[in-house]
Amino acid sequence: MIRNFVMVVSLLSVVVLTGCSGLQQVSGYELVPVIDRGSDLNSRLEELHATRKLPSGQLKTVLASRERDFLDNPSFNNRMNLALLLAAGGSSIQDQARALELLEGIDTLPISVGEQELVLILKQFLDAQVELSNENDIISAQLSAQEQQIYDLKQQLKDLTAIEQNIQQRDKAVETGDGQ
Image 1 (cartoon, rainbow, N blue to C red):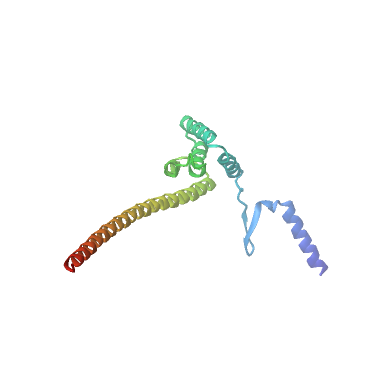
Image 2: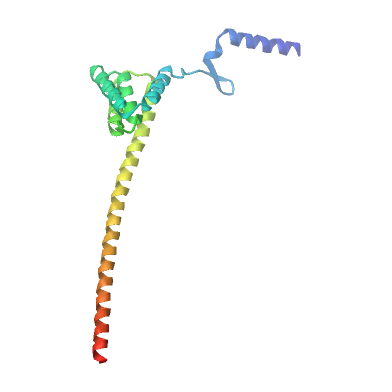
């Protein structure tokens, strides 16, 4: 029992001293390196969060600044900052189709695996949003067409009701005219 205790303490000491804080247990006894949690991603998202709260005029100023940064230096960071702002910024500056276009050009840049995953996730999100927007446009067009059909049918009903009333009035006039 004491021997097991000493072995466990020794093992824990070795683990602590070898710096296994950079390792994470996945399943069973298999250890893999812990992936950096993305301080760049965190700062990007914090900045996006703060930016989204700005009034429309300031958002447009930030957008113009990001566009200038991207035109001056189309690096991954500038491209990603602009794409994120266009994808998830305030409604006055959102342009998801353009954000998706910016992400399409990232494949040629030297980026890390984590950055590739971020781009992939954002692309999937934007693809879904663009598809939903297209579906919404189709449904809106169908709704407008159906509303026009309803209006036309109501107008036809109104016209038919007026014709029916005219016929009934004429029949009454004929009946009252024959009965005299």
